[in-house]
Image (cartoon, rainbow, N blue to C red):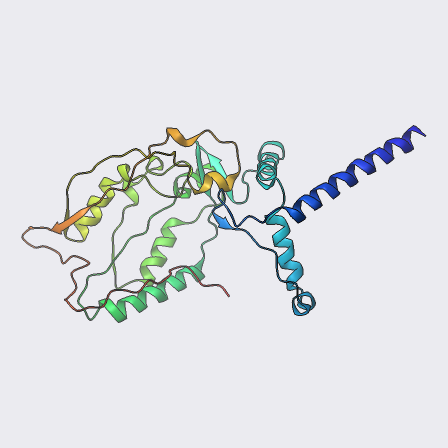
Length: 287
């Protein structure tokens, strides 16, 4: 008899929990975007006979229910903590933490993206730059995985092979190598980008290879709000507050022609009348 009552109480509590969350999800206003993930959230799909018969409504509604679930952020954090602290998984949704830095796994090498880059660069050079007599340069910038992945036992790109493949596909451009100037500390701890105050040597090498000289002053400014970075919200982990990271506003760089005896033509030295380049995406288009 006690067992039956215990089972009944369990069923009632579970039913109330499911009913409560279902009603909450049904009447809760839909959020337009996730600030922590920096992406738009799925909205309630339109109910039509065609969408139901094609199966599209079911798929879209599943995405909507997942994105608009009540207390989504706390549940994301609970899932991330369970995966990394309890199940001891080494990454959560492709993001991993090593040496105090968050990074996103990029493996294996995506040759189709290189195909798309080759096609876009070729289009720009042939249509706008070659006939105008412009010098064209290319530079491969490693991500944090270059310093973290292999050393931590994570899947890692063969960066040497990647650069060789990129150079082969863009043979008509002058390559500028900056790998030897970069180190892990040049990147933000919770973001994919590098820190501006740490890359003056990189800027100097690029300018020198392009035949220009960096001039002007550099004004350091602290941001009013802490910089969290794109990976901070995506990881959903209770990381240390990133306010200790350097926070810098953008600083303008001015370029002028070098007055060396044999100056190289700057990349932007195109004849007057050349049309401005259109805004083209270098990301691989998906259907």
